[in-house]
Image 1 (cartoon, rainbow, N blue to C red):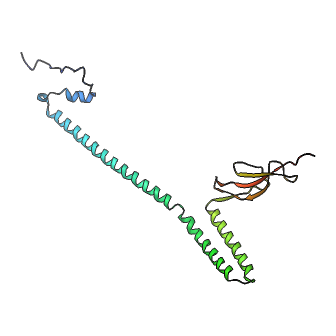
Image 2 (image 1 turned 60 degrees about the vertical axis):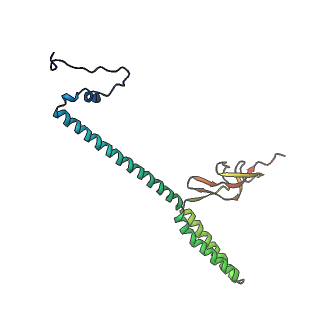
Image 3 (image 1 turned 180 degrees about the vertical axis):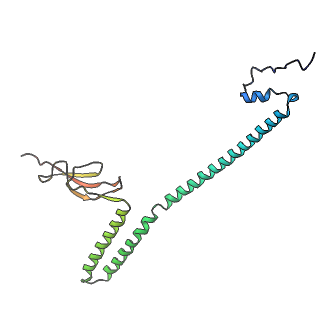
Length: 194
């Protein structure tokens, strides 16, 4: 019996999992029949697998570093989000302190200048807050909107239509489109018929 005429086919174990076609091709090669071409191909595949593994490790490390950096930047953004607003409000605080000093040391003539100073400070503060995106909710005379107004009572009125705001007790504020505080209002209702 000649060994060169016989083809040896490996018998598959029914319990063994089926391998991928490339793996079957590599597993079907007998150690005695490995040619230099097969060896070179296996070495090339092993080098490519090593290269892919190294690339995967580098990419995973880069991604982990990116996640850590993004989390750190997010924390910094949250921590210092109000920094620019506070830099604009600090001069207003300085002006209020100056006004208080003048009020404590002023005579009757100083009351007019104090009133003018406080008015200017109020305008300065409103300007800073408006630049930061703060909007006033003006409710007087407008239809009552429960999304923007908080009704504390109803009052009979012939001058204002029923369901409209008769009086605004406290201003409401929005930050761009988000409501920060609803306007506190009194809503008009029709007087009872006599």
